[in-house]
Length: 162
Image (cartoon, rainbow, N blue to C red; front, side):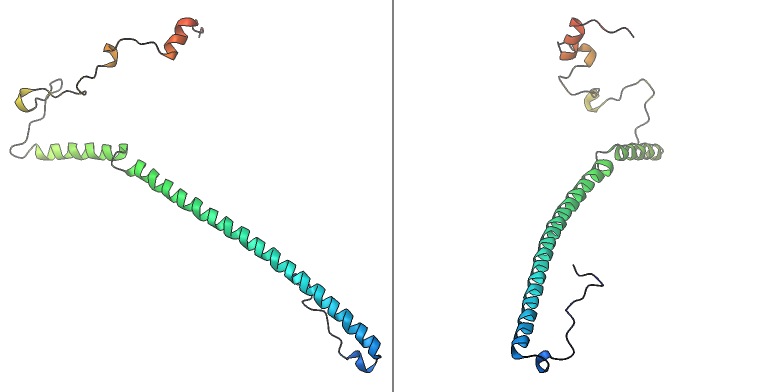
């Protein structure tokens, strides 16, 4: 890159050397000037190539940053859905609180179902008590003990004293 104090072009001679020098001297002078101009051109071309490479790298970096940003935005949306979505604990708690408020409000209205006494089970349609678990499922206490890796390790190795 060009520095602030770096000259942009070589200073020009205020007077043309043609009047002072012979033709041979003037030819050497202009030949040297041409050589210096070619070197400056090569330097500028090298700087341009280096700048183009830097620009390419920056474009790749910006593209990567855009992809990262999009991925993080998707992750943020997913996390917000997890935290504030329909299945979150906060929403369930609000739903239960709303249901409790609705029950207390509707208990005074006509045709409302009276609140159950503690220890009693609600009766569904046809006098059947609704099940708390899915049909065919057994409680943990009722399941037969199966060999697991953890259980296998306990039977083969004595427990450590605490």
